[in-house]
Image (cartoon, rainbow, N blue to C red; front, side):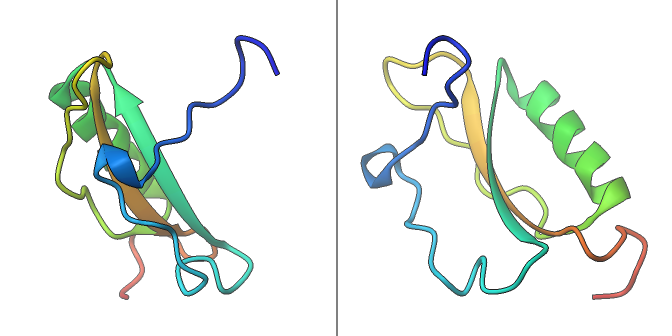
Length: 85
């Protein structure tokens, strides 16, 4: 897997399990995003919101012993961000 392997957060990191409902249809995704700081994290989520319908930024988490901050976003990539939910 090597250096490009994505880091997966688990329940011990404060993230809840991804349920089948969250990804029950093609086009529904769950994104766990880690960034150097909250400003970067908010910028990334704002960019995602312009492209897709998203849940917005969930609470930002800091995991002891790990660099950066993490948050989870639920998105429907079938709809653009400017469509009504």
